[in-house]
Structures are given as C-alpha cells and as structure tokens.
Length: 92
Image 1 (tube, one colour):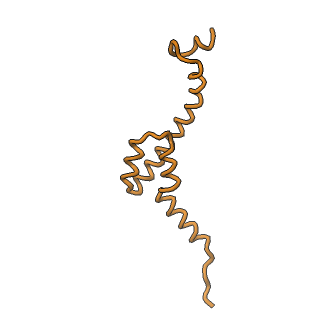
Image 2 (cartoon, one colour):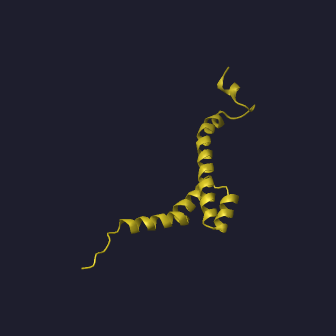
Image 3 (tube, rainbow, N blue to C red):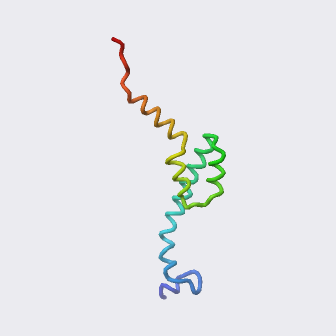
C-alpha cells in the first residue's frame, strides 16, 4: 500500500495530505480565538464587533486584532494594574 492509496479521495494531489496536519492546529486556534473574542465583545456590549466576529471568517486574524487592540476588559485590567503599582502619596 502506497501513500497515494491512503488518500481519502481518488485523484487528490499528494501535497494536500501534507497540508492537512498543519491546518488542524490553525483551525483549533481560530475556534479558540473566535470564542474568546466573541465572549469578551458580548460582555462589553460591543455589538458591531460581535457581529463582525461572528460573520467574518478571517482565520483568526480579526479575533486577534480585537483581542489585542479593542478589548475593553483588557484596557480596564491594564489601567487597574497601573493604579496598583503606583506608590501611595504621603502628605508632609
């Protein structure tokens, strides 16, 4: 039995079988990023982002952009962390 005999479709090019193992992690990453981005956009009441993330299939690019630059929860956590690190002022 040769490698071409193990391919699921007759006449399928052999390089497709090499791409499939690389596509599975990308699909899983896209699903995870999309889920997190949809969750956070819904919690932040960002309807436009929720609809865009739900409809547009961008292989993880749009969810990554949202999570990196437009996530309101991340901005709140970041600003709260800065306030905690500041030294309390003492009056003299």
